[in-house]
Image 1 (cartoon, rainbow, N blue to C red):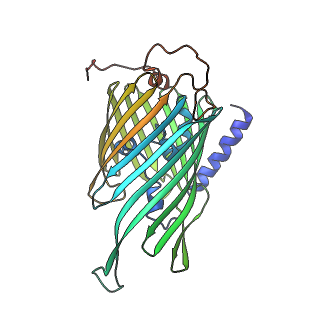
Image 2 (image 1 turned 90 degrees about the horizontal axis):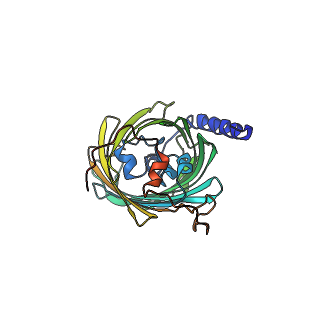
Length: 349
């Protein structure tokens, strides 16, 4: 590792450690910005920080973007939630410069109806719809063969009739691969203490955003992947999550996870259209991660433009050079995972 890389890693580690000391008074858009993004992450119980190498890493762990294969990727995600709430996000990521990848994410959620009542009344006087949005931009790169680094900037806003709130945060992440089958991850949420500002009738009140340290790990026993994660690892609200996914077939993956004692499950379907367009459909079923007994359904559709001609310095168009084409259409996934330890019987789908 170069001296410059070591200094950069040390600085980010210091920021990550410092991020765990912030305070939090917000429980809406700021709270949603800390939840795992994507149906795959939800199905694995949220323990995705060390295993996300897709566009959704823009939010889950920006360092994971550096492990994307040459090309560009986008995900459209929708949530079918109870109580009239809805959820949607869109993510896009691609290589923009040598060893530098950019990710952009938009998240929107209908928070349902908020009740208004007098201080001494149990019955609400009226209700109003509330909504939250989170916008994220991330950059990531590879410091050396086994270490990826990333940072994201997040803007959050929400609105209720007559009220609005906004705030921003900065996250940093590391992914380290000490052995081919082991990945370790550290993510710092809200590395710099910032305010979440409420505005109503010309008056402004502020809450301190909550900083948190996330520590995770992944063990790739190809075709089985095991993940574990500790959220708010140094704080009073420490939570553990974990999960596993099984590649039963190159086109089918089953997933299961647990988060704070709540079980989750899901599956993923993937295929290639031609030699360059990859399609992936993910589904998850899980309880509301912010509390409650209701179940939430999430579906995500991912489009990936996979081009062996793509150099890591282009976001929109591949180069005109034509190196030898890989012999197998599974070149993408085979390149990012260690050799299989065992194989399932060939199940036709």
